[in-house]
Length: 301
Image (cartoon, rainbow, N blue to C red; front, side, top):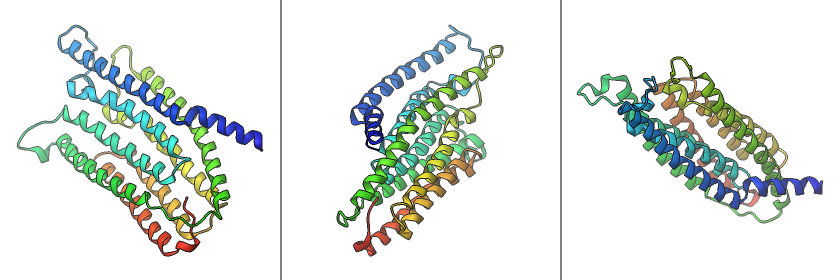
């Protein structure tokens, strides 16, 4: 058992230490900056007829859409941060899920900005209308995440009698996080390779923007649902308190709603995302009220 604990600690230090996080941040930010200028250069090369890519993709028409590429790498870093915070704080882990889906909407806004039709018929044009929905949703989500983080920072110290149980729970979360690092890395690599192979060599056509926006993240949130279920089941070994079980179950429902948003488009997708975060916020607010009212018996995970 000790050897297994040492192995978990070693792998956690290797993949998820503060030093590794800082190094990963620098690498991804450098890649993001370089990718932005490469994307920008390709757009201008096409405009100047230096190259003929032969594609009508919106990603290659307007310089504003070049922001889409570095945002994609920033999202990859957010995925890493989600795994990084999983053993440290369950509420921060959920917050990262909400931040990722919000950044996906923000990334989509940059694409939509490059294709806006500034006319008097704003609310009759489907693309402009969706841009309006996403713009309002991003502001609303930003505020909801702020409220969620505020609730997540509320801690109730109940003594140290349950500390050994908490440490065991954290150790299991570390193991899950260690497994997720290579899993998501290979998922991202496979998705990227698969995307390139799907591009037709003859027509040089790119996939639709809708499919690109959902690239990787539909499978990503499917995995998160499974992780949340595993965490819920493990938590039964360490607490049987009703409010904690409901909190963890509620977070699973919230993640499922986010995952469902990738299966639809338009206003329904945006509404599902907002409802998911609203539901998660309601769950943690009610949980904290339970936590406060039952203060002598509590243990905070």
